[in-house]
Image (cartoon, rainbow, N blue to C red; front, side, top):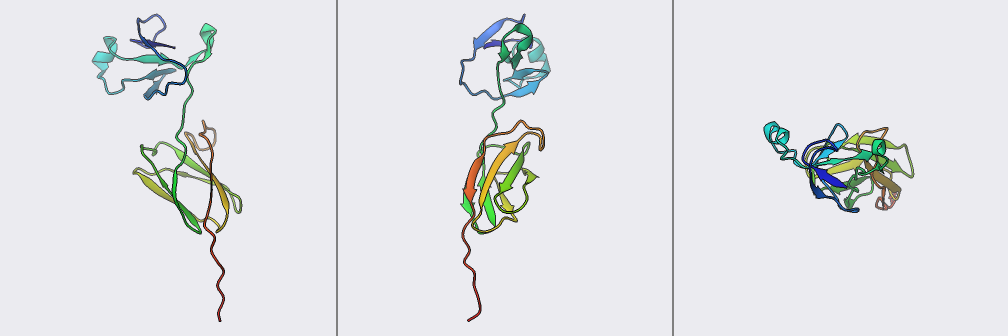
Length: 155
């Protein structure tokens, strides 16, 4: 896929992206801007790197797809899970599908970790990120199990 100096298929090519490469940037009107830190003036001069996301109108089909991170569970408890992140996930929602109980979603907080609580002990749980809570796009599922909690009774 061609990398362009401006968000136009007529703009000069400044590079090529190969299949399988992971890109970071900001989506702007169907284009991925890989240099979102540049000033408006520099972008208007053609100093940016832009990649068309969907080439259907050109007969090329989908060129890029959003890749969401996979939740990383770092600690399991009987009724909760601790997740840690190496990037900011505050723009995502976390979908939680426990084997026992109702599915739910939570907005991810700022920071490097979060706690998902209200789960049943010894229960399979699936987690995934979503950009929009109900309509996606969605990331891959991560499956985990909460810790077993022994039942105690009076002696």
